[in-house]
Length: 217
Image (tube, rainbow, N blue to C red):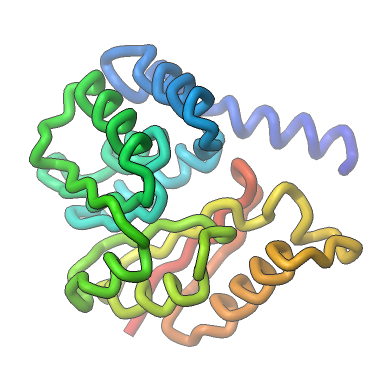
């Protein structure tokens, strides 16, 4: 990547100061520290800012997130959602969700605004109600991401938003020499979204890449 592009990406990542998102300036920093301790990689600031923006744009009141981690992405979503909105966040690791709940409490969020569910995402998300959600978020490299997309299309209301993080997968997706199984699967997922007639998508390089799409009738 040209040096100018690198500088532009770095500038964009720092454009939204994480210390301004919540009244407690260190909430997101502490959530990131917990993520490092748990060995989970949270979304980068640019991706988080985009998640917040889209949640606000659709006035999200019901959101599904796959992969709670230490709660960094969750916090960005909650900061953009309607004040009465409820986030349903799914993770296989109970320890991750325990750490995330600490972050939610530090941010001053009412416990009724977050529903944490421990379990395998395809099984949990398969039990959720059709067309009842304003936004669905998952990582492109998540296990069974293709199945998660199928469920997301079912869950989203018309005008709802799909966000797929890690969409450029460590810059491997754009590199034709990268042919490992995960990168190949991410490319296939992106192609499927691009071809889906019920979605209006865009792929942006914020964070590690975010594919955002609006569900349309």
